[in-house]
Length: 340
Image (cartoon, rainbow, N blue to C red):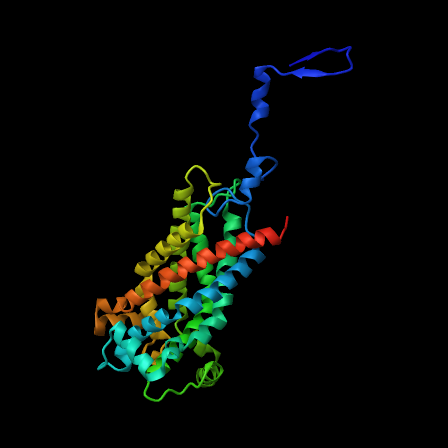
């Protein structure tokens, strides 16, 4: 480096080429000044990014969960009916169309939403717990550049699934299944959500809302492990070497539907066992393992995949909607909710 015009009152610095190299390429892992630092804070999950604030994750997750369940519940109703029908009335046809037409004929269109209240009351905190736990664990797992590997994402998803199963999902699913099962009886005994919950607790205590806990933990843990693994893998593949690449809503929805489909084929047997353990006939099974053995012994291997088609439709739509709404709500919150 040379300095000229010492007597002119001005300083002119002319760096030599060799002097430029160490100054030209500083790393910006923390998102400092310049374009790289600005984009890092807005990058999608799976690449270099600023961690999502836990409060934003919880709020966005709750909003996404509430909207999603109102859209997709009829498919959940049909899926649960298919898994219970042979136990309630074996003489009835078990087709999807038959269940829909019979329900509408006997109870009107609102019959397809029987049990929605239990899921709606719980879905908001369930999804909030899921995304809140995932963001908390993933923020601890990311490397210095903010990148989350596919395997790390799977483990964080597993933790999120277990947490939501214990805190929210098990009592929610138990109440939902009992409500839907009750409607299948010739003389339903539950008159509404709060009456049904009261009857369940009076009959079996609070423990009665935690039937099938181990099956629920297995189902939710594997569910979220598979979904977040697939979602992160697809994001990392899509962004490639450019972690700042924007992922639009349609692509997020397609990735979410793919993650949902993978989870359905991966753990529908666990879902069937969980549903049986939470039904009104759960007293027939000593535990989750005994339930699985009895299903295999008396109904065959195919019984573990009952309700796959309606569950596939519901879950693909569910995960696509949830991830899309979650990402958009977080993006909006980032604009109005500033934090360090």
